[in-house]
Image (tube, rainbow, N blue to C red; front, side, top):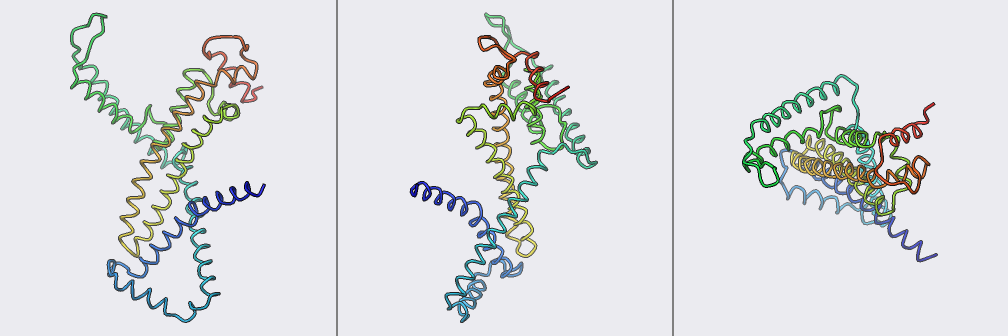
Length: 308
């Protein structure tokens, strides 16, 4: 039992350091540097060195108890800053995935919908004006490479707004909504009602992959929260704005990548294990063959929603 407890203790300590102490300590260090130098002396290393020397020369720091108390205070402050970033990161996740019924969100959704339709019209126009070459032996036609490249570029520009016509104020919400729409179109099942039950029967490997993608999305939201903190710090020390911009750009890229992977894994889980769930609840006989039908999907939605 002791080796097990030692292993768990070391993992918890490592996680505590990585998630709480180190990010918070880095932010505190940048805050101390920024408030010491300010805008006017933003690159004055000598001024920073003199401040550190003056702090180290104080008699109180020669006492062991004072030094230990100061170290504990720094650790607690760093942990508090990281907890605040985690809380703000959770709020950012909810903001990214929101439906948005307030006037500002509705206006943003309408603007994204208008932009998507404009780009979709350009894709349709490019497809309509494509001049296919002669048909091959199997009757298939080919599109010139330059035309096909233009169609792909226009499609990618449209998909950067949303995979389907936007119904939410953010790309993240529309990406998850597109997954739900695709699942319902293919199997006639409500993904929101299906997913908690499907999660219970997923193999361990599939569950780890989905959880990993979910954790990556949460980490990107926390990084966005840190970007907001550094942006606030830029009011006293302008180089912090560069850190904020860098954190924001990395967070956006990671969030889109993680959510795209998460949406794909969720859809794949329904494709692979949806029929197994229908069998377990008795809607499909164990010896039946074939794909999951719309009738079965409708039956699963009705059961899971606890409809009267």
